[in-house]
Image 1 (cartoon, rainbow, N blue to C red):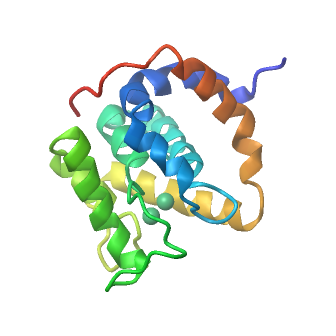
Image 2: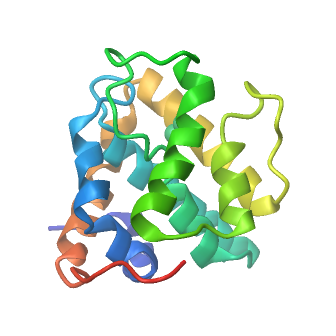
Length: 175
Ligand SMILES: [Fe+2]
Ligand SMILES: [Fe+2]
């Protein structure tokens, strides 16, 4: 089978997030719709893979940023049915930080800021780093692709990542 063009980035990406991606709580994101019919794990892998590529190309803090990007929507509920006092757009970044720290230990200040500000400019809290801007951009591109029903184009890369992940089933490491 022909490999997708982006396949050359898959190994490095999996080495960066493999321990997180194989964790049962991260896998649980499959259960929750993001923009129907896309699930939250598929979206998060797309966004973090794009963040990884941007950070590698621009020589940014790739590891920290890619791991934060994978967890940026780690809210673990169905936002179509589970309601909170605040609207989902405002509530879920805080829930993602809380879950990330509950299951994987303290985030770095960079990671925390990236996750909390990823809804900018809807939120009035812009990211304070180029890594955060990369995440925000990747998230918006992902949302537009979901809206235009183009997200399935990422499926061949996603399948490569799933195949590669079989080598990375080990406990989560530090940030
Ligand atoms: Fe989000
Ligand atoms: Fe997102």
